[in-house]
Length: 165
Image (cartoon, rainbow, N blue to C red; front, side, top):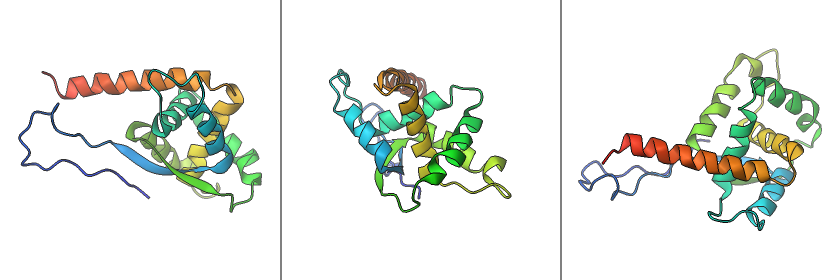
């Protein structure tokens, strides 16, 4: 399911800084264990100035996994050895991520590694795997908060390039 926020009306003549831009977030689902872990990070005393929300935290996890050259291998290894052993009806929570990180997962979902004769994994499984891998790398979540800051700065940089003064 692809969900985005509405785009501004074309007849709006306010300068870009005055127009409320679309949030550019995509809906995903996250398995309950990983959601609960991110929820604890969301409310952690380390998550301050700014306080990052779920789209930032999930996107940071995806970004961190994709910093590795073998991201695809790591993801499918976890999916095939860990996530596949969980009950398929495991509860999921609806959350969002930024479009840039969604595109990384969508490209992976459409890749040959996710086609016949291999099992087909869905977006929620790919998203959950990225969060789970980050949790195994650093249960404190410090690396996720650092990456969330980098992602935020990159989005601000892209925004300035798209709408120069």
